[in-house]
Length: 467
Ligand code: GDP
Picture (cartoon, protein in one colour):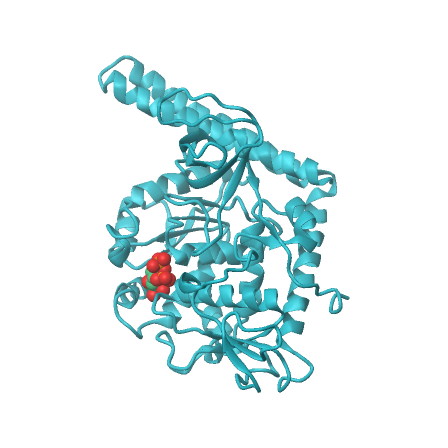
C-alpha cells in the first residue's frame, strides 16, 4: 500500500473514534441538562447504547479493511524487516570491533525515581548513544530495584564492551573525539540534540509512517526490545507466573496507579471507569468471538483494587497477584522492594491485547511501548484515562490542521489549514487542548481535523552495518 493509503485509513479510524467520543460526550451533557426525570432521559440512553454499537460495527469493518488484500501479511513482514534493521544496528553499536578504542557514552541507571522512570532514563541514554554513534555503557551497581545490578535480570547491553574506561573523558557533550562521555539525566541536559523523542530517524521515517500509527512510540519500543532481553532465569520466572496466574489470551490489561501518584501527579480513577472500557472492548470482540471468556490482567500498586474488582465484576476472570500490588504499594515510597513484581506487571501488561490505564504513569507507557515491538502496529491497542502518549523530557509534540476551524465557544482556537498546534492533551470528548504556534492562541480545538506533525531528525548513518 502507499503511504497515503495507510495514513488515510488510519485517519478514518481516528475520525470514527473521535466522532463517537464527541457525540457521546455531548449526549451525556444533554442528559444532565434535561434532568433525571425527564422523558428524554431514556431516549438519550438508547441513543448512547445504539450509537456505541454503530461505532463498534464500523470499527470492526475498519479492522477487516486493514487486513484485506494482503495488507495484514505485508504489515507483518514490513514490521519484522524494520525491527530487524534497527535491532541489527543496535547490536553493532554495542559490539564495537575494539572496546578499548571505542567511543562510549556512560549512563547511570540509578536515577532517583521509580522503575518505569529509570527504564525511560536508559532508553534516553540509548537514543543519545545511537545519535552519537557511541557504545552505551550502563552503570547499575546498587540499583534500588536489584542490588546485584541490571545483568542479574536482563541480558547485558553488550557481550564485548562494558568497560567504562578510556583515554579521554568528559561530561556531555564533549568533543566528537572524546572517548568517554558522561550523560546527565534528561531533566538537566543542556545542548539538547534535535533527535530526542518524539523524533524519529529520517532514513526510516517514510517506511515507519506507512507501517505504524505511532512512529515515536515504535521507535522507543525498539530500544526497549533490545534492552529488556531477559536472562533465562527471569524468563523462567515469568513463564511460571503465567502458568500459575492463568495468563491466557484474549486478555485486556488494566493498570490502576494509586498511592503516591494520586493527588500529586494524577487524579483518582475508580475501577468503574476502567471496567466500562473493558466491557466495551469485550462487547466489540463478541462480534468476532461470540463465546469469549472475559479476562483481565490487573496490575496496581493498590492491593485493594483486585478484591474490589472481583467483588463488583463477578462475570470477569481477573488475573493478577495481590501480593505484587502489596509490595508495589511499598515500592513507590521506599527503596529496594520488589523488582520481580514490577517486571512481571510490565511484562504481562505488554502481552495483553489492549491496555486501559493512565498514561501519566510511566509503568503503563512502558507497557505500551513494548507492545509496539510485539505487534506490527499496536498503536491503537490502548485507552488512557488521562494523558496522551508522551516521553518525559520530550521535544515539542505538534499536530497539523488539515481543515480550518472557527471557534464555536470562547475557549476554542481558530485554525487555518496547515497551522501547527502544540498539543497538551486530548480531552477524549472530541476536543484537544494546545497552543497554535502561528497565532500563539491557547485553547481547545477539534481533534478530528488534525494529523500528527511527526518530527523527523537526522541521525548518523548506519548504512555500513545494514545487511
Ligand atoms: P510512575 O510514577 O507511575 O510514573 O512510574 P514509575 O515506574 O516511575 O514509579 C512507580 C513505581 O511504583 C514503579 O516503578 C513500581 O515500583 C511501583 N508501581 C506502580 N504501579 C505498579 C504496578 O502496577 N505494579 C507494580 N508491581 N509496581 C507498581
